[in-house]
Length: 466
View 1 (cartoon, rainbow, N blue to C red):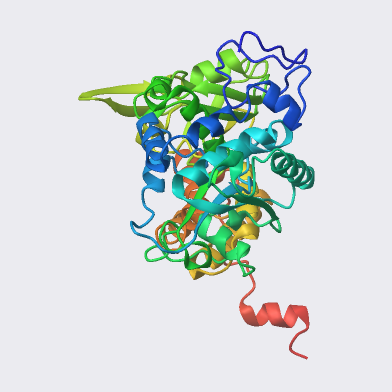
View 2: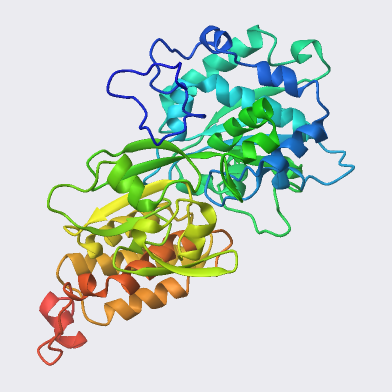
């Protein structure tokens, strides 16, 4: 990375480890295949197709690469779920439906380094036996879709896509499919339903695990943009060498998108687990705004449970147990889970002591109430109920029982829906209300029920009894 020069004012922080974002904000760089090949692009594809497909999968497994889209599931293990002796076509889908609030990383890869994604997809297709791949990109990225279409045509012109790639028996086509602006299409089976031209209702798992019964009821691998880009680098350095970056079980780099109440918000590529929350906020992002104190952090996009700055967290390192504060939490998958939240999509939202948590939750609830696909009753009804209650609270009409009601609704959504959207909309409410009750109580007041009109009086007053 030392040989790469970046645009003035866009230089990486010294704590960064630029791998996926190596070419983002780079001086003299453009999205053309000429620029990419001159920098060593597609060499890893040439290397991969000289290997056996299983050898590529084994390298990805050895790397310890985990999905960067939210769940953090091991990528190589997912690839291994394709049924043995499968006779159906295999498909690969790149999930570029980046719509988790607080997350803004995949769009920069698409806009500034599309060929890195295409090369990662081609290597992945070769490994899993897919001859057709789709990039499912959200409607709100029209320029990104154009850039990808152009990059695909450039790759095809160089015999890097289509029939007999690089003179081998490997055939592969990649198509760009634009979504219609629905958050639920970030869920892999909802995405597949949409790609098939249907309403994006997520499928029940089991039996509809995509690796067995995915697109057109055929084995399908769905990976995130960032995850697929990492595949190229795994092949470049080998799985074992890649696994030495980051920390055990949390290997490689990941891109953190920091927004909210920090001096220098932005995107930062760091070694997984090699930086703590405090280092990220106070060192990399320049600290909080003048005179403010840290109140809370959402560590993995809006669906992750909020972490309070006043809370202590018990974590385990091997057989050792220790208690740490929010500043000492390593930014990795496993520690974040031990702290009761998740690393998710890498969207880190920082909130200082000027923030009203009832207002923030209302903003989140408004988003999820709008984005529920409506298939499951608990989510369809519950997300809207929570939104209506927080609407009333921030408008000054909350009652003390609203806190209990919000928690109860959240408890009755989580774990009772077909897909994880139930948890996504319930976890913010559950965690915000539990950790910041004072912020919610100040929006409530005891009503004098004796002075309230009874139903008959309300009808008469409205003139509806005439």
